[in-house]
Length: 541
Image (cartoon, rainbow, N blue to C red):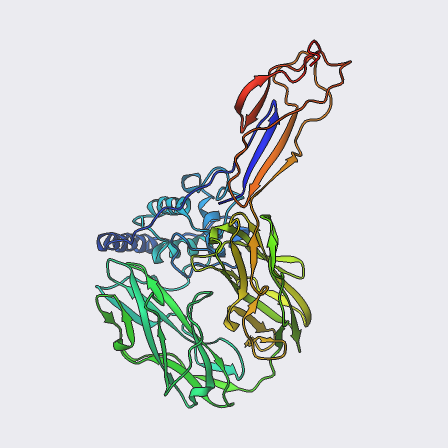
């Protein structure tokens, strides 16, 4: 279901919003991969003969953005909006001429239109069109932004899944005892098979001079997306398992997974993680390759007094029935920042309930009444993640109000509820130490922050009629034809609404009007129904 807007003009006109359905994507094949390698070699040969620099300034939507992950249909984020903006700079790769995705109306959702434009971009740049923005395309896009590639373009060598340290694996250094989500390692999984690979199990070993309890929760992240709940360390081993898949790696592509941990040890301890052998990875790949053990660097624990981030004990809204509407507050709470300012770099909310993910759209994050980041939609898992890494939101010491708004466009008689599900679903960085702060709740250990007790129920569909701002006013010429008398907007929300009859009454000053004939309703410029006389001075009925 979706909000539908209609403009009614009396002689009258309507406008409907076009809806575009996503298309499916298939993995690239080995033949396509080989063509990509050939294209890359051609690009390298061209670069040997000279260099090129991007022209013009970086678009506003791309400030601070780099392309660090593969993008496919369903991907969301600021990098998707930047991608659309770059594609729209050329008429040959423009996503759409009007509506969502068109110049000035770029979105953060990667859909079928975006994929079609990406393939045109790939063709124009000597890259074999694929069903994703892969390493070669990312390198080209990053070069267009003036930053060059954010790392080596990884090309699989032979079949199988190869595991290695990422080029930007965290260097050995110092982390603060008590910090959250301390980055321990980055692992790159490169898929040489001709089909998507699903990794269902990953086992890590804690290394260094420390105790198991020094790492209280260990997580896997795909960029800003949390893939797992916090895992504990048992006899130096950390195990992650999900039969549905911890993550997937596209055919011929790669994915970098970050290992982070909440730290509660002793100053001077050293901690790190490693993949001991290929047997520690479970997947449907044809084989597991790499040079083992794959070992991250050691981090040394130091004592520091970090800022505090304390969530209030309760969140709003309370349990209620709610009408379909735009900009409804689906989650809100106050957060107290102590000691010093922190920078919010990421926050993610989970939706539960019976409404479809598409029934709640244009989710927006606000801090103290000011929108932060771009509007987002729920992903396939019911999460909405605001990745503010490129432009963190500074939260000064004191109490701040964080809220989440959404357009309720469907789900009549169904329920929904929003949660800050896990302590690792928000990232606050101490402004002096540069370390992630472990959030608390009501001066106690963090637990799930849930809006209301039982959630909200969406009421039956509604329809509203409002006069358009460009509805004509003033005098009209007597004896003129095809005169627009008024324009109205009809908006349905919650469910489809069928208008079976619509009565239009003309208010007439009988002393000055000789008649209003051939009146008609136009829906989006198309006549609806037959013409009728709106006023006839000779008709006394």
